[in-house]
Length: 89
Image (cartoon, rainbow, N blue to C red; front, side, top):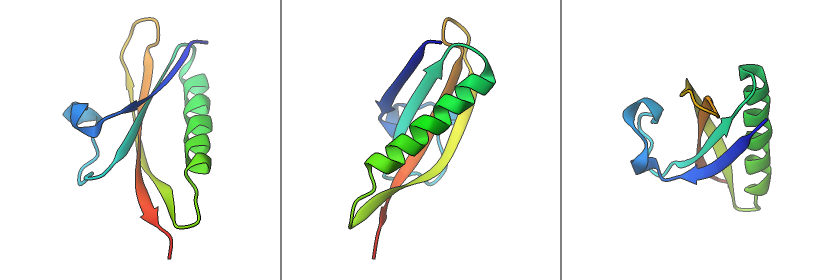
């Protein structure tokens, strides 16, 4: 299975990939080949990895949502994961 994970600037996303009210969002795209079930497993693994890597004493990330789309080609499955920074008090 081919896998590609990249950070994406929110302003570059088309409307169908955006969350409403998303100022300050941190976005990552995950594209894979294989089945949708395999894709979803990779997305969950990457989501947890990003949350773990960005969990610090004073700030951490919150996952606010994931948008899936089938885009065809060699890596037909694409999900955009949205995060924001949560202040820890």
